Length: 114
View (tube, rainbow, N blue to C red):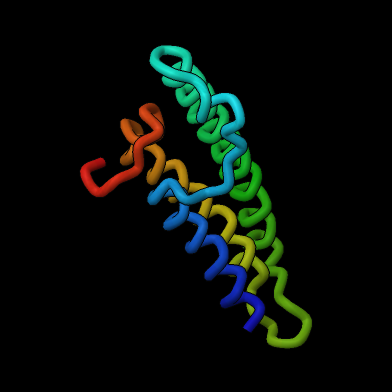
């Protein structure tokens, strides 16, 4: 049950990022206009992509280690690679979602047309 919740959280994260409903600290970008706002949005998008890429690389290493060692959970003997793969898949899909909606991330406008 816990492993299903873990997968639900990381897949749900992708939906929030795609829709632009994620938690962001837009103290400056909400008040900025024109080129400054776009520059801040580009910087935030780059940081988001870099952070997600960092998590993907390192979670891939963790999942690979679990696959290599054949580690399983204590009670259910489920391979530990399965719940840990949720992090890898979730953040990889976040990168895809950001790239698909790149225009919305740069303009800061997440509506049905983007």
